[in-house]
Length: 129
Image 1 (cartoon, rainbow, N blue to C red):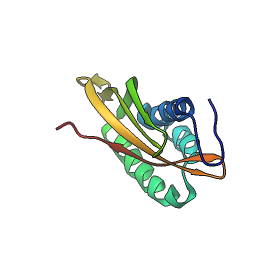
Image 2 (tube, rainbow, N blue to C red):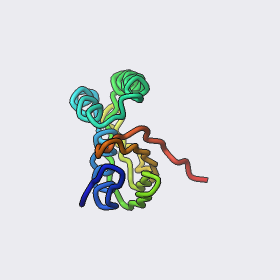
Image 3 (cartoon, rainbow, N blue to C red):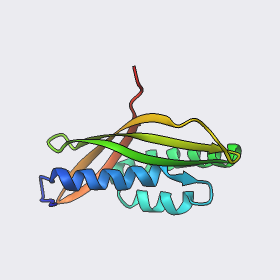
């Protein structure tokens, strides 16, 4: 596991991706503030506004529908050259404490590397075809 000014190891990128995606997807209204603050520490500065809007919309949805989610990682694909990671797994959602069917999901995380610091830019769900 290593990071340099202009390169990062696959293992470091994989571990950071799992950590950050879990902060984003394993969440409930009471935990949102803590998760948001932890995740924002790793967001590229020019993407902070985008992420604040994302979290505001997520907070409204979690509170309105009484939602809690838990993500279980199953597979990771790392492209350290382009700083992109694809993660597949199961997303368990509870709405008003009622367990919904488990959903198989895939997310793509994009990063920037600047002066030896790895920054998350976006997390996008990849829809199944």
